[in-house]
Image (cartoon, rainbow, N blue to C red; front, side, top):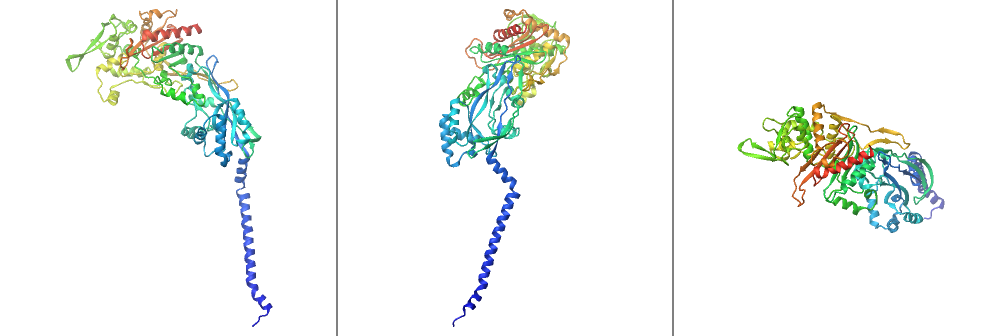
Length: 619
């Protein structure tokens, strides 16, 4: 049966209407969803996305601050900033598809292997700073820098910047005082330098005053905001905040005196293993010269691509990087008799008139077996001496007796001897404003038991009394005690920085005299010590060098140490000489230490030469 078309149209309309409503509903939902997304993106997250867009076009650029210059006391520059070109890569601006090609092309222009660039990017890039430029080579020749600039359109992300490099005007002479700069270790950067606003590729002071005074020398970096194109190339500058240069350091060192001391010691390196010279003003603790040889050129660490040279320094058995003046710990030998003498005079164990027979040695009976004894040798037979001559002649028997006791003289014994050693600065840092200062060692029964698992015996005290055995001191400690004897018992903190000056030339801080302790010594103790030290210069060994026309008070020392004989005539000894002058009104102290040498034969002549140079400059 045929149906009327009108009936068919009427029966089909409800399904078609439902489809129309469904399509319209879906369209309305889609438009509503898009509207909601637009509202979220533009209103809710608009600030975030605008900032992201700005990051793609606006780039903050750090302007490094010039590092503070370091001068000697006469304002002669010792550490300066030299201009140089550096090449950087900003990985965020390097197209991923062309990355390998850009690295290869850049490496070819720089004359290095592509792997070097990859290593630099791997170790120096901080993931949280995607737009931070990573320095891949410093001190690039001008022609190479220009070649890269000309090809910048082919090398997106690669830039050339003008920076500075630290330059030391007389490297080996001042290396141990000034130190050098290097990139911080990753953990150092994360936990300190990043928090202080340092750039990831920025060098920092690693040793010497460069390290101790890093915060003063560094300055405050500035910054600018630049608009960049899609390749990261600057288009225009929008804002700039200038950097603040680091402060300058004026050292207490006298550059000419430092060179004299360095050349005097360095010229003797063929006959001595190493050497130290410490020249100070005992009236305020200023260090006028501080030399440790063998030395090194700290410019090696400032220049890039010096891995072979640095590896050579690290592997050198002569240890040129080791600052023996501060970190070297040696038996002080007869310079320790100053400690024994002070203790004996203060405690009434002896006075200046106490006479002891220096007959070539002391035989100590064994307290547990009278048939056994120990012989303690002296360096010569000098006859009966009083305190002044005992100190001048450096008689071992005399100071064996004062320290350990013999016959009617009871001696200080180990407890009092150790107490006086610590009282005058042994076994503790002097507090000098340089890093890595060692503390030396004042041995005791407790130390020997803990360190060696053995009991203290009387022989240990006798050896300690003359600066042998387990007692150790640094050259700066010996110099500090000499200064205190010159000032009547006042200890000043040694310092190598005299003042800190801002970029406008204004003195920000004077590093003046700082008293660390006062030891109340009896006048008669000081008088006897001074007379004994002046008498040193009248002995046959010292008299040939007593030609300054100025009275010098000093003490020699020749310290034995545990080492095999090397076939030389000198044998296994270190040499010391420490002195101040003029004896009546001290203005300078000189302490010289020589490895593989003797006190009267090696250290004393060197010290007198340095003292002569001082009085020529400061008559």
